[in-house]
Length: 154
Image 1 (tube, rainbow, N blue to C red):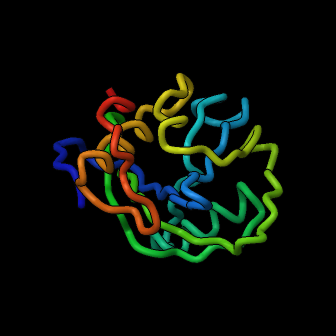
Image 2 (cartoon, helix red, strand yellow):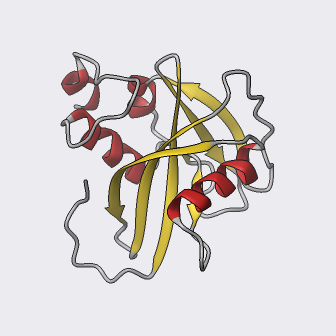
Image 3 (spheres, rainbow, N blue to C red):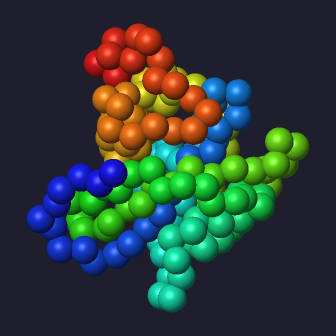
């Protein structure tokens, strides 16, 4: 579930993996946050006293204005700057209407896996997550790795 690391952990974060019709809910970060203009899954820092699941639900609400339910923890990565990132599967209501918080999010969109992998603005950590999924390091409920993933993730 996690990758080995020797980097001291300075911060913890959580990321939400939300699916609808084989597409992932993703965001483009606003110009006022870290990594402005980059494409990624929704998420953010875990506050003191919060569990990963609580932080996930809060971050999705803050960024996208929608209620979510934390599912299962899928994966863990550690950034080169010492942030431990927990990747969680989450669900939302089928008819949920996204209302983005413009302070944090420039836009949101549903993307197929191959579209994400080919996006030059995709955050490296998100590309690494998708690559690990493609290598069957973990499974994401409700979606299978495309048969041509090796060509896509190339």
